[in-house]
Length: 232
Image (cartoon, rainbow, N blue to C red; front, side, top):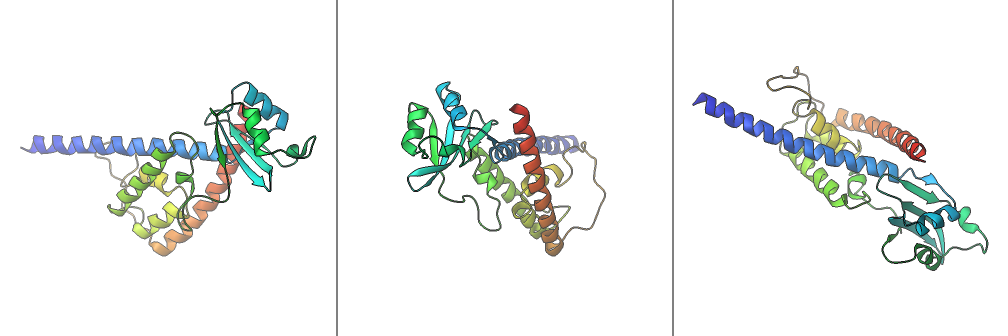
């Protein structure tokens, strides 16, 4: 009987590990796409038109100021983002409108999005899991929500639920860290247990989340600019 019980437990451990890895991969992909999309490489209006004529543009985001465009950002694939700053948009006649943009794109196969303000979660929730660009966006949001529910229904080892709540929100990368570290580090082998330690409470968890959030923002900007410059 004992071997059967052990086999069942081993089976559930494998299932849990698979679910954990799938959620982690989806969230890491969403984080990568988001970081790169918010660190686009500057290009000129002429370069945008050339990319559109060559069929390399897959999606375009723009902001309107009156009847003119003040900002255009486009993607040539989920990991390649470009943008036109306001100054290049003041070429020739001094205006660049939505009509001009759609004419440059040529047909309706390119997805266009009018950005009217900030989007995303509330004050204490991160916006990036719900603001990922591309076809995988809904899966990133689902993965984040499922990880959050798993956290609420578990007994975390490194911090209590309030500490992890702040890490999920203000810390920005709490869902990724939770999947990596709880209830034991992902790289631990079967039967290997981490050393016991005192859990973070809500107060220290909040302060830790603030620090992690600041570090995450700096690393994201630096990494996004580095990768986008590397791909040209």
